Image 1 (cartoon, rainbow, N blue to C red):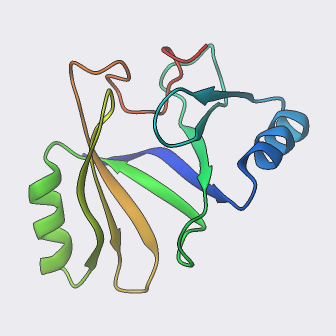
Image 2: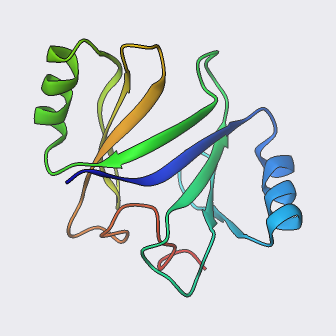
Length: 134
């Protein structure tokens, strides 16, 4: 059964947001290396199945907080979303070490994403656990 595995938090100033979440909740926030600045938020380092989050630069007006749902197949999930009345915001995009991500709008205009995890990737269960980010 698909489940929520990650929450993407958009920020005008990601560094400021990272500092806020560290101070307000004591979460571990680590900037990841890569072409796009992104900070991984680990809410419970003792529980690798705990849903985590990430903070990225807001680049589009629709970007606020985007929940991510784990699915077995991103293409099938995208087709089902459209059949159910949703729309695709960003087509399937490969995220190295994570998997295939499709961002969509539901029938009420809420933006979410589905993630087909890369079983050989460093995040194996998606970006929720922060095993690879220290």
